[in-house]
Amino acid sequence: RSVVNAGTTDKDVAWMREQSGRFEVEISPRRDLCIIAVQGPHAREKVASQLIDGQARNKVMALKPFEAVDLGFAFVGRTGYTGEDGFEIMLDAKSAQDLWQQLLSDGVRPCGLGARDTLRLEAGMNLYGQDMTDDTTPLESGLGWSVAWVPEERDFMGKDALVRARLTGKRKMVGLLLEGQGVLRAHQLVRCGKTASAGEGEVTSGSFSPTLKRSIALARVPQECEGQVEVSIRDKWVPARVVKYPFVRNGQILIDL
Image 1: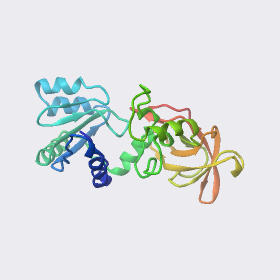
Image 2 (image 1 turned 180 degrees about the horizontal axis):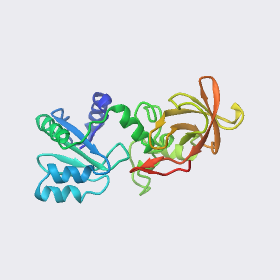
Image 3 (image 1 turned 180 degrees about the vertical axis):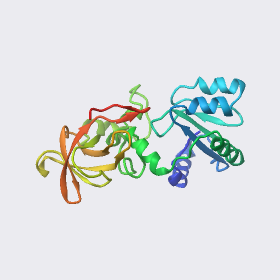
Image 4 (image 1 turned 135 degrees about the vertical axis):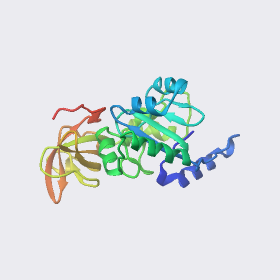
């Protein structure tokens, strides 16, 4: 079961079908299903206690992060995209409408894309089209942890290119904490050192962090870029600091302010 980016569904399915020609496999898009993500400090307990009964409740509460279980009437995962804990519930469209109304009546509040974007940025999670694109490798997007480097003899599509990039890559993904006035936004230039010759990078995602009360960003910069940097905001170079992300996870601040 693969959950693809909603905006690239057709392209992703076409690519998988193209690659699947050599194998005995059938790819069946499930456009009849919906996903509702319920996330927050008490999300799992609220879903399990009010919406799931009996043995199903025990199964979902036993899930570890990045695990999922098929309950028959729904497929429930613990693989959220906000940095908060919770469940992602996949079920048919009619049931999804009923579940949505049930959640509203139980006091669960809807969250828009803007709020979700600040949460995923605080948690250091990539957004397709900004932090990762068709033109960047996982290593340039801080996703080296997702590549199966071991066992070494295991082959996969793109492995040779990634092995070379691991040895010779010139860019990396870092977190930025703004130390001057302004708001970090995508495509702003990042100057590593006092002069442009020290190397320039670019902000890929930026916003104001509600938890930190500071502006934060993800940026793709030269490998040597560390410490103090400057970001071009409205034609002015504003000081910022390279930090290790995630900035926040499960409501806890993880960086020094």
